[in-house]
Amino acid sequence: MKSTLTMLLIGACLATLAIPRPAGAQPSDSNVSFDAGGLMPKKPAPRLPDIAAQPLAWPRLDPGAVVCRTEADLDKLGERRHGQHVDGPIDCQIVRAATAISIVQRSGPGRTEVKASGPKADWSGWTDAWLPEKGSVGATSVSR
Image (cartoon, rainbow, N blue to C red; front, side, top):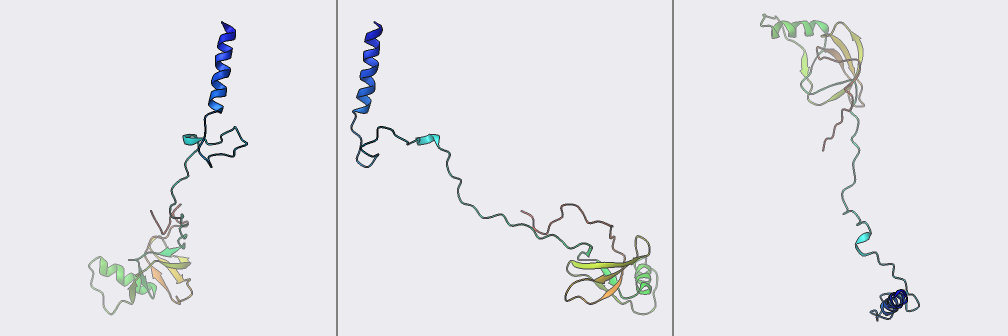
């Protein structure tokens, strides 16, 4: 019985080797097939490359911050914001775009003398913007 099973197994193996294969499927001198079919991992579809976000300047004044030419102008602006009557003009400007600055001095949490630190910026003034010692962690200018 055991020899009959062995003979059948050997015959089945020889029969699979004798099955004709299409031309070009593999070299005629090879009996080994390296076609893995669905076992190989598929290549991922091409996608756009990741773009690293440019770090934001720190310290900086964000759009909407106010910069006054003098500390007295900053005082007048505060009085006007509280509804008090103020004589004379107030020389202040609203920041339109994020602007890199350097802090010259602090005179409390709501009074900071700043100087623009960009190649085209050549001004200094006083602001009441909150400027912490360190920037926020992980802040980026580009979000996905």
